[in-house]
Length: 170
Image (cartoon, rainbow, N blue to C red):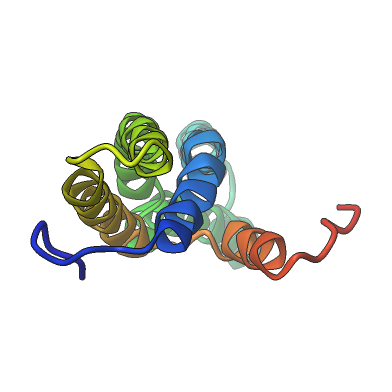
């Protein structure tokens, strides 16, 4: 990781700027996707729980056969499983963490652009400002890299951009 005392190349700052621009625009979409996924599971679990709650007493009271009791029991177990999936997978936590990264990437993007301008204009503080901007970028990147579930599709997209490939149709 770069420190304030270590000079960084202009190309390194440019690479960070490309990545920061990409993630500043995409990370909030990822956060929305994770939140929607978590919400869908919660809604589905609530519906299953409601159906089970409504059906369990009438089924148990009206039937002495094991099949209706088994069906209601299985729906109840399914509701519990559906409710726990977003917790185990961390969808809600990931959505919150990714949402917090949007403004951070936006801020660091501004720093990197300023650093490039200072380097281009041979400003005396350009190298130290660029080093700090890259350090700040690496901190935000580390937070993004810690997201679980990790945004693999977006990472593949930025990797294609970095390698100069065209973005394939989705």
